Amino acid sequence: MTRTLRNFAIIGAIGFLIDASILTALTQLAGWTPWHARVPSFLTAVLVTWILNRTHTFRGRGLERRSVEALLYGAIQVCGALINLAVFGACLAMFPRLAAVPVIPLAMGAGVALGCNFAANNLLLYRRRAAQLQPD
Image (tube, rainbow, N blue to C red; front, top):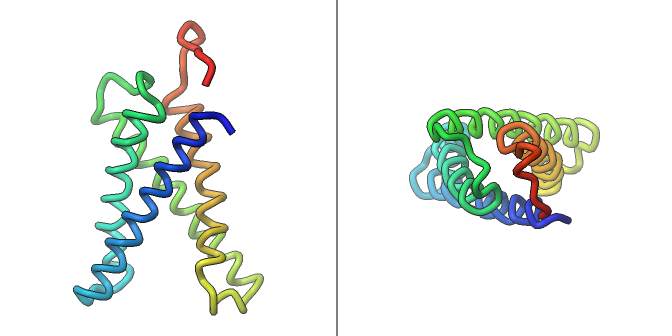
């Protein structure tokens, strides 16, 4: 595993914890529905992971216009969330007993989405020019 992928995975785990913590707090303590709570939990996690990935994982590879970079990063994260949801749903459809342990299909969806998000960020948003290539 390259340093870049390792950092991306660690920051993704931090984002997952932030997302899960806010989701849990809003549903358990504030009485929000899970669907409503997903909006601030997801947006907060995306913002935190963008800042951490920009400063650690992809340092020096960001776009000059941070606002454009943030929007593109967010779009990639939304695509990853849709992939995660699709894998989650497919797992539950193929293995209905997993509904009793939803963390298993959630983890499977997160793993697939992590790979897709890393590839999109590394190859599209934070790609390096040939003259800038440095080993990880």
